Image (cartoon, rainbow, N blue to C red; front, side, top):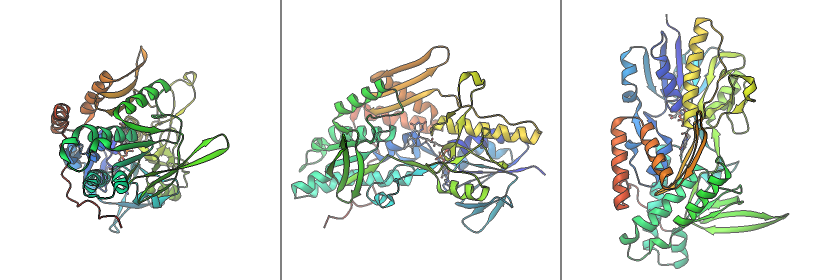
Length: 445
Ligand SMILES: Cc1cc2nc3c(=O)[nH]c(=O)nc-3n(C[C@H](O)[C@H](O)[C@H](O)COP(=O)(O)OP(=O)(O)OC[C@H]3O[C@@H](n4cnc5c(N)ncnc54)[C@H](O)[C@@H]3O)c2cc1C
């Protein structure tokens, strides 16, 4: 009988692991709670009505149709609720259990509100399609509510948007919301002037896009300012409620307290490993790091459990250089190329183990970092083999970002749709996915 591999999660890591294993003499069961693979890097476009959901996602069964033909892959849409590591079983939400010989867990990450889970109701984060629909309804609904609002103070609060966290997602969200207010909506409302919209980007550290070099962070800040985004750094959020955000800044030992009245707050600040990681770690005697990610061995397996690998955003992994003279191991970042590379590496190590060969430590090949800020503005920080760092910003960076994302999208049809929608939006400023089924939120008391 062929060994049975269970893979949990069909994001970037899980999908790559399935692809790498499907030609091997193994039986694979892939489990995901959704029926689609999601291209998260373009999710903010769904949240800001630039793209529709099917443009940035693809049905798992269709994506893996070629692998299905090989006859060794089963796909199950189910929620994994835990693991029985001792008997090697994955526990599903309907009381079923899947026995495995090898397990790859790629369940991704979730939002972290740094111990303030009550903030989630007022400041949704962006991780799934459902999150994107919630944010889109709130953003579009806020302009509708402002148009109906007779009280000037309340109207200003409806026209104030706060994004918390100035990483790539926060910067993309803030830049795009400013663009919508300035260019898409001005002709469409009678009582309000959408150009008076105030987009505030709050960041705890002293610069935006902290994973980029300081010069590119500075360029990004200037590009955001040009779009009209009010960037405030060095701000620690201390409270979020239905009417706004409170935060603290420090000068020396003294703290200053501030308040922004806003009806629409978006959380782009904290990421933590999916809850499933803690269940796995508890069962397998593994450790989790401060962000709730499972600490893995150099070959991505768990200590004492070579049959279990954890990959992608759920793994706290180190990249090991081929030659120790090239430097110390470095933490692997939570980005899609890293998840894909881990998916391939975990599959290769699993096959090595089946052959009785030693496994290899994981090495992350970092090709660089991209972030867009809005129309015609982006920053690019590439590592080009043989040349070194290639850094640029502005219009050409934006074009580079655009084509890179189209290239990496799954499915020819999706690429065509995205190209068409972006070209249309470029000339008309129109956003193609503004139809929202939910009514705007009820009038404030
Ligand atoms: C808004 C946003 C923008 C981003 N932008 C970029 C970017 O520009 N560039 C970049 O490189 N990276 C970006 N990232 C990060 C990148 O998307 C992640 O690093 C990558 O998706 C991680 O892949 P993964 O396979 O670990 O997890 P995911 O892709 O998140 O996949 C996890 C899968 O597991 C499934 N799952 C989770 N829990 C369960 C369960 N209990 N039972 C069954 N199934 C489960 C989920 O449904 C999902 O399909 C972005 C992320 C977000 C959220």
